[in-house]
Length: 440
Picture 1 (spheres, one colour):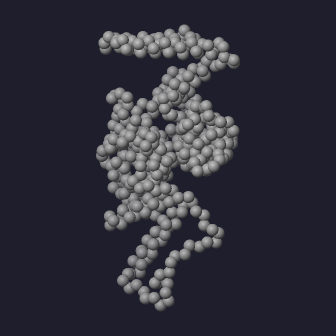
Picture 2 (tube, rainbow, N blue to C red):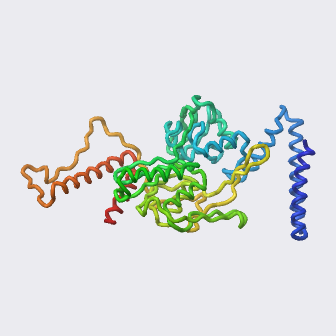
Picture 3 (cartoon, rainbow, N blue to C red):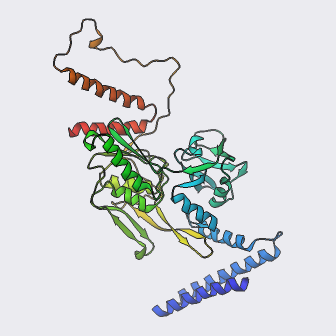
């Protein structure tokens, strides 16, 4: 086994030497670097052989090599990793929009598993997990010392089985347990609805179906409202959206832009860099757009928010996004597995790198906690002239105009009542209404 391993390594080194010689003579510094690399690879082979022969228990050769590969990749950054055949197959299923699990996107920080965001209408979402939560234990076992892939494997299991996660949340004194029942996760990439006079586009993830779901949803909802002239604008809700496919982030951004750069990716080498531009066509037909983001908005979500913000096509409302500004390339390798390798950073049209900084909203709006009314409490409006006995009627408006005014007031009261349920969304609706009033 050692001879096979070292033969492969030596072949790679010889190939490198030949490549260098073609372009010019090897410098002393390059020769020293190649010699050091070869010595380290020889050291790896020696350690591998000693583990196989003298470790207290018999080890699986394949598992040992996979662990070494994964250790090499995870030492680079939190998003690079090795995907064994099973994990690679599951990842491909996830990008198609249906898989089994809990419904959370996670990363690793300070040795613990950190929740990037729960996915809408999944077991984790219904159990109350929040972006920023730290998972410290899985079924009573500490996650310290585990790789992210190992922790994720522990969270996987049969549909219908319970799992207990120990959560530490900022602002709480002690960790607490959350029991979740595993289920089949069926992602609806885009949910479209009308709120008042605005169309709300809730994008939960960027899968293969995101853009097609978005285009179909907009067309159906605009038609249901009797045309785009009957709406104030669009709310693009990217809160707790952990990202997904870069191609879909580009397509969604392009849906609301007629021209200009959407995003650029810059790798280590010039040939690894790329630039993506918008094509003519705006699904919103020029109507105002408000984008909602929070700390759970990551990766592809930040590409969309950054592109529309830089082009002044949308007003971004909410709190700072997650700050994942790197691009991972999935590279199939021998043995039906793959490696996820960070190959580039992405930049918004103005040249901003979002890495670790995130997207800063144009208007910072914290989400207020839901307030339960006391039992039996009643909201009262203030008294006005119309409540006084014998008050004069208004003779400047027709009956039809009065009815229209009352309808508008009812709509405003509906939006105001929604603030207790979703303050950020209500804020976005107020912005669209204000912009529409100014346009008129």
